[in-house]
Amino acid sequence: MKRYNVFYFIFEALKGMKRNGVMTFASVAVLLSCLLVIGGFSLIVMNIDFNLDQLGNLNEMVAFCESDADDATVSRIHKEISALDNVKGEPILSTKEAQLEALKQENESLYGDITDEENPLSDSFTITYEDNSKVPELAYQLMQIEGIRKVRNNLELANKIEAVKHGIMLVFIWFLAILFVVSVFIIINTIKLSVFSRRKEISIMRYIGATNWFITLPFIFEGIFIGIASGIGSFFILKFGYSAIVSGAASDIQMISFISFSEISTVVLIAALGIGIITGVLGGLISLGKYLKD
Amino acid sequence: MIEFRNVKKSYPTGTVALKDVNLHIDDGEFVFIVGHSGAGKTTLMKLLLCEEKPTSGNIIVGKYNLTTIPDRKIPYYRRQLGVVFQDFRLLPNKTVYENVAFAMQIVGTPAKMIKRRVPAILNTVNLADKHASFPSEISGGEQQRVALARALANNPSVIIADEPTGNIDPQMSLEIMNLLIKINKLGKTVIVVTHEQSLVDYYKQRVITIKDGVVVEDHVGGMFE
Image 1: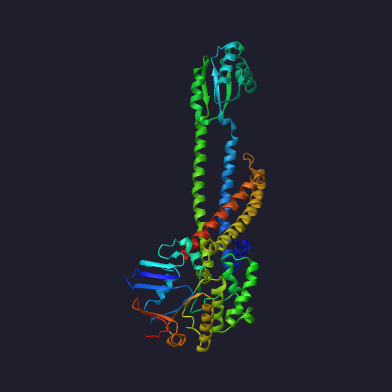
Image 2 (image 1 turned 90 degrees about the vertical axis):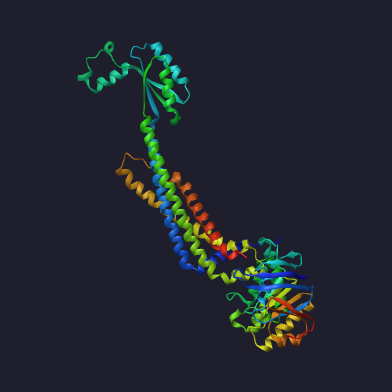
């Protein structure tokens, strides 16, 4: 089997890029912009997601015991709650005495006179759960435990936040798809120009017996190089841009926490290169199609 | 061996270029294909180069049936052919040497072999001293010899020349034809498509005449009608 020299393809690709220098530059610039928009949007979405997840108390619910429950009942309830599926860790007991104490410290004049005997509060358990989608089930199971009077959860709020996250994701995916298509078209145009300027060469190659792969590969490499250049460029712009914005904003807006770029840099780099290379390959394949038909 | 069996070719526009062509060319033959413009010569060439497929009938070249050949095998079929065109079709940005080497490169010939073979081929077509020239720096006749060298590069069994002397002066035409005869003597099948009566008459080889899409004459040492 004869071997082809991979440097031939790379060399030819670089030559093609040089020949259509302006167009190559233009497509790197446009693809770079697309990647920047995609990347910027991804970072925003990642941060929103990160912050929403930080609202950890959303996956908690509180179960109140009967107000006359004695210590034995409370410890039985504790055990029964621990045994349930979907309960993460140990339920945290807060006794009615402790709750009254907290209220007294908050407002002595209003609650100061209430004695422990008169205490209208009840012992409660704070339960952390694992699976959001099984909250109604868990609430039902808790209500079945003898001695539990009431269960309170944040399901509605959690659902709303979940819906917002879904909405953002949906917009994000559409956004991504459109930008991806735009990028592919830009690369197709560049490579088409390159193909056009070499159509004579291509027709000669075909007469001599070059396989379609042999003819196509330099153009695919061209697309890949454009993709890599844009990918690397956008990575560094995102890196410095994001870091600058975060360090500026973090001091101003303290209620929002930001992901540090180093945590996600690999993902961003791989994504930028990946999208660049995929658009490059697609662009190369699509733009050459009609020249290879016999 | 090249064989056309009841080959018919019509185009989507309705033009019937070849009506019913039957031909047999043995290995190592030298054949002129002649005819006026519009007779069907170009279509015949296109069929041989697998640029077009026949509407009906079979074309057999060596082990390939061009009527049924799958697209992916066409490049490998074409490697058996060396093609020379009227307009040379050299790559203007490559030197004489590179133009010939290019043909070997694209079929994956190792660099070592290319370095050995290209000078030898350039020698065959008497162009050894022009190896570093660009096509624009040499005459039409010389360009055509480069094209011929390129056609020979991959050692094909068949050489097809489409009006090889159409763009060059008569003196050079003779030189090209002599080279083609020389190549034929080396055992290669040579097919020359032409409408130059004087050349055909001079060389007295087998002549196949096409008129209105059919073979009207086929004889050896023949004269142009």
